[in-house]
Image (cartoon, rainbow, N blue to C red; front, side, top):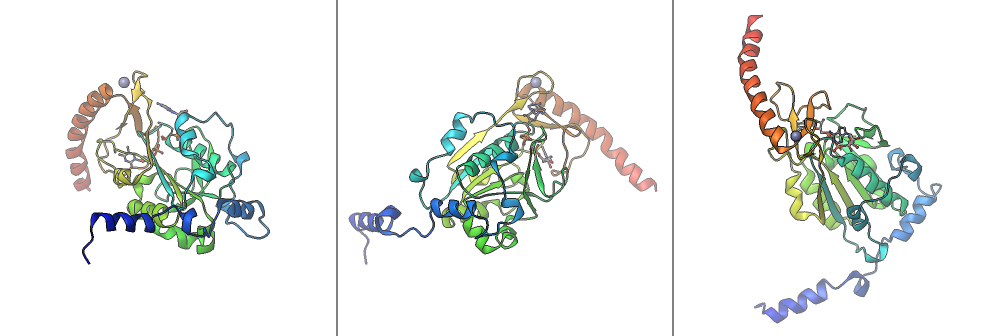
Length: 281
Ligand SMILES: Nc1ncnc2c1ncn2[C@@H]1O[C@H](COP(=O)(O)OP(=O)(O)O)[C@@H](O)[C@H]1O
Ligand SMILES: Cc1cn([C@H]2C[C@H](O)[C@@H](COP(=O)(O)O)O2)c(=O)[nH]c1=O
Ligand SMILES: [Zn+2]
């Protein structure tokens, strides 16, 4: 059958009318909130027991954080994807934890995932550079999340936070499935660029799918201006190198360009020595 413009329009109207018009909602935030507040009827895994009291202190939410927290009435049965990027020390993890806290305070069940490659603070906690800490699940890949959590617990979940998103190769597939099909609110925090300012992992690939994108900045360690980039202070050249202030510093554009030029020169000088040392044995 030939599809005319008016036929397409009528198909769209009947197929994609708001759920409240012709679909019975199987899951509501209200029923999930009840489950959350009555643990005797449903035993949540340990890392889902995130209570508002676990966050302290509680600074006021920024405008962007307010915007991402809509009321239940304005939320559809589809999910959302919110992306937080920036250099190291920009407050990505802090912002993720605050958004998760706000969702949890609103009665939603939440879970946080981080990459198991980052073992700096153990595998069961997500920790900011200020030492703020929350329980989380450390995974090698996101596709194992539903199975690790259990299908029932996954179905009850409203909000999924993902930290260190640059380390998850299946980030795009997971976020699309979780938001488009499973109705989850996914809040993703990660580095947009590596120490050479190249796109890092799949973080930038999810931007076309996102409801909101926030690029945070740190303070340049060398001049105090806004820092957009992460400079690696050591001679290592592999893309992935777990570390904190011992290995990296946030810098402004001026100090990135200057610092990177100096470090590149130092790496070029050091590289032949490393080869020579390795073959000396
Ligand atoms: N150069 C810096 N610029 C900004 N914050 C810094 C810097 N060095 C340390 N910090 C601390 O790091 C905190 C942010 O930590 P965190 O949320 O873990 O950042 P990210 O996840 O982006 O690496 C800031 O609140 C601040 O106290
Ligand atoms: C720039 C850069 C960073 N990493 C690593 C270093 C840290 O372990 C994480 C980033 O942590 P944060 O929460 O954003 O502070 O990523 C890397 O492996 N490669 C890089 O180029
Ligand atoms: Zn600077």
